[in-house]
Image 1 (cartoon, rainbow, N blue to C red):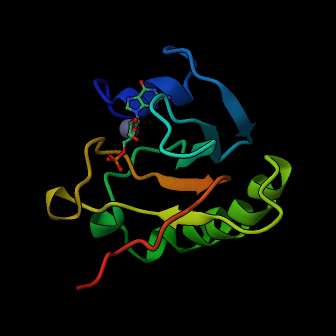
Image 2 (cartoon, rainbow, N blue to C red):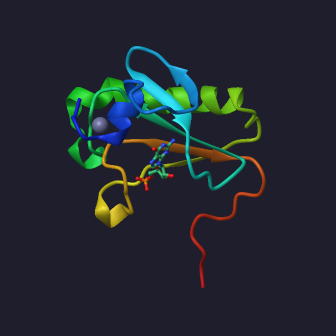
Length: 116
Ligand code: 5GP
Ligand code: ZN
C-alpha cells in the first residue's frame, strides 16, 4: 500500500470507480478515459509500481492476473478477443505508477503499431 497512489486508493474504495471484479488479491475497474467501447484495468491490490519492479515473489500474482484477463473480458462482452496493454515505466508511457493491465476491446481495434 502506498499513501499517495491513486490506484491503491481506488483498490481500497477511497476513490470511487466502476468496479468490474474484486477478490482478495486483485481489483478491476473501468478506465475513466476509455480508448474503446470496453476499456478496463486489472490491478493488484498490493502496491507494485510496474513490471520493472516485479520479481519472483510476484510470479503467482502476475500469473493469476493474466489468467483472469480473458475471463473478465468475456464477462464484459469481448467474446471475439481483446487487447492487453501493460505500460512499464516512463519509457513505456506509464502514467499511473501502480501496475495495471489495460483490457481493451469492442469496436474496431487497429493494429497496435503503424508501420511504414
Ligand atoms: P497508463 O498510461 O499509466 O498505462 O494508464 C493509466 C490509465 O489510468 C489511463 O488510461 C487513465 O485514463 C486511467 N486513469 C487515471 N486516473 C484514473 C482514475 O482516477 N480513475 C480511473 N477509473 N481511471 C484513471
Ligand atoms: Zn498503488
